[in-house]
Image (cartoon, rainbow, N blue to C red; front, top):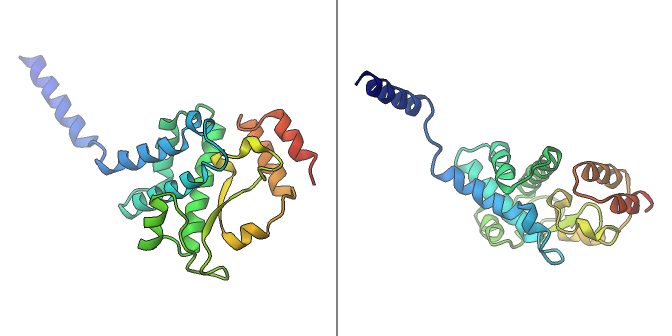
Length: 200
């Protein structure tokens, strides 16, 4: 009898001090996890990860509106998605947080923009010199240089369409630095790294 009472108290204290997560939070986590799962990304066709970036930003913005912290949501999402390499998880998380920030600064997180992004479509830029443009997804390291990075989330960045169209496939310091990080994280092969380092 005494053991049963102790067990009942232990359960009550656990529920009091460790309340279960809200029903909403796992939804954000599971939605993002399914979009960035490495095993799925490697099976996608050309540029098929682009709409996934838009959807991830939608879920992050929605989570934040509900009082959740995007960085915490992403910590759980990349873990659920199966990122066993912590550096790869970190790069993926940082890229998605950066894209959330970009979308916000460009005024794309209004009701209309979020409705588009939820479907993986391009929101309309509402602020800045590119106002009226569609929000496209750019490959930081051009896919023409390293096709294997086509659907790597850490290599994808939101950008106004006109800015993206005016970009060249040149490799600069940012691309070289990212290539080294991606290689260290197991997201870029040695052959791919050499292709970046030998490009101008």
